[in-house]
Image 1 (cartoon, helix red, strand yellow):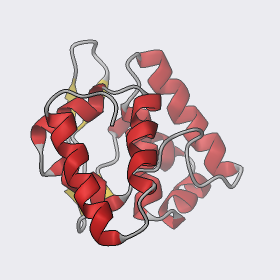
Image 2: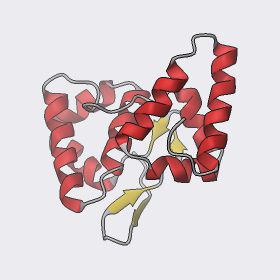
Image 3: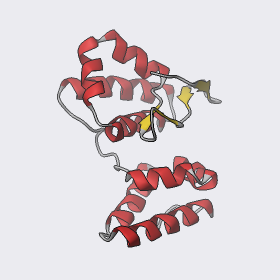
Length: 154
């Protein structure tokens, strides 16, 4: 696992979300990495997750604003994996195409990071409401434009 650790203004360890090992594998934060390495059975479960599921856990952990919340989320991640859960609770599963589009648009990505979980779910639900892939691509483009302009809801 590669790491790229920085500290934000509150002293919480953060990682950048640049992808490694192809385009779908997120960098694992050092504090989560330590928890996974400490319990080999949990590490095996982590490796068994899809890259998208790992990305969702990492993103959920990274979205914590307080150090205590982050620690709890790491412990919850460990416990969920032990219990056979493959996703963080109540967390919007971002379509990979939208995730990549956000990565290509720094303003949209910055706004996305500022959204509440409910606001993120609204964007994801809005995009997921379109079934045709060509139309979905257009909606993803619209969502990125809205986010880049500072919108919090689609």
